[in-house]
Image 1 (cartoon, rainbow, N blue to C red):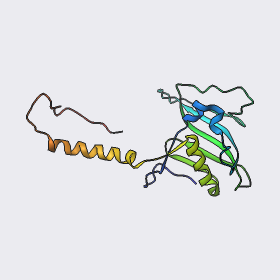
Image 2: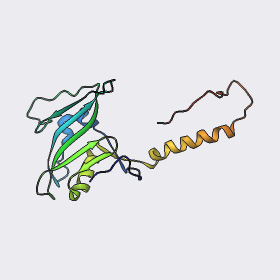
Image 3: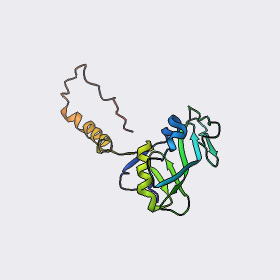
Length: 169
């Protein structure tokens, strides 16, 4: 089950991987959710915003295994993808779960979806996209279009002039 970035409907969730950096192995805590038996981080990709677009990928049976020495996640890199192996009580075998921030979540088992979304929200890997954050760029664009009509155009020093630009991300 995959939600594509080019889908016409806005995603309900936004995803991030910051908990891996800030919490380490505690980010994979699933004890509050009895429907999850085990979670392992199998792969972690770190992208660097340099001219060559370097990316490193760490792979292991369990990257955050607390019985092994902790890995060093480079601070100057952006956590671009994480692949987990999740064992849910509703599935007979471990399932793959991949997060590619900000809007892509790939889950093999549809039966595990509700359980995994609850866990992702609890751990901070997922957050509900609020109406305000969805509408903010639209409202800002509308305000930009309406502003010239509301301008007094008196040539005072408080005017920005015709060379000003507003950039929306």
